[in-house]
Image (tube, rainbow over all chains, first blue to last red; front, side, top):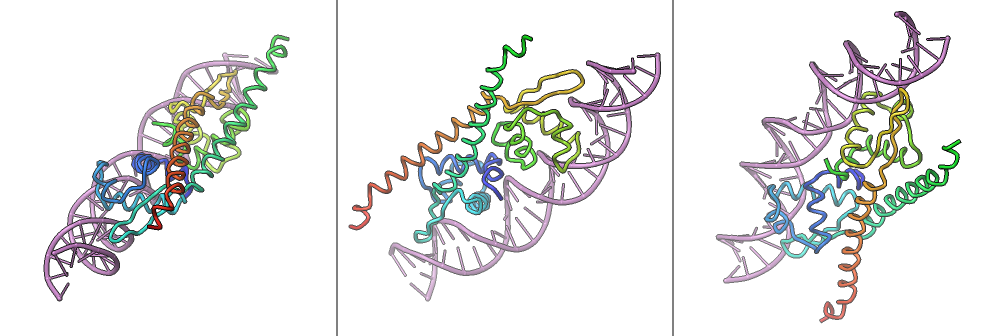
Length: 101
Length: 101
DNA sequence: ACGCACGGTAAGCGTACACTTACTAAGGAG
DNA sequence: CTCCTTAGTAAGTGTACGCTTACCGTGCGT
């Protein structure tokens, strides 16, 4: 599953946003979200498989944090969209005189 | 539906990517994608409701293009994530000496 | 007016997926 | 060793959603 699809789920996006703030254990996330702990686990697996988070086992805990590389790839996608959208917008703005013909 | 959810569907993301390149009519999009035209219509409605595209009626055609404002909001979200992820990453990098205690 | 192209929408269908509970393995404290 | 905490995973369930076909309204050319 790719990163966009992974973040397309509201619960997963909420999880990701918390991990952006700071690394968390599963129980922490589960205590803050309106879903069960196993649901959180399942979502974290999706995020991990999408390359967006990294799991670090510490004792019985598994601390999840954002994977900068996955986030960078997502950002690159968006910057591409943004660049193209800007270019297209400028093309439209530069053509009004033609439109008045 | 918010923009993230809207782009979380692979078909919708494919549609959006085409509109990033240039404005398109529904039939154009439908001819390039492996789904029916009404499916494309339905997806475009979702993208429009999410504030990501704008529909411009031209004769019998409806030309869809990217809405720069919607894209900017998405980009702002991502820049927030990126900024926080960088800050958190720097915090980790600045702490290695503590880790070696 | 007629015919065609275009596109929105309704209705229907199948299945993927987000949720749950239950189970079990791993780690660690006492 | 026992007990507790933590977390992954299996299995089950219900419904949302992405797809289709059918229908119909609008615009436009002849």
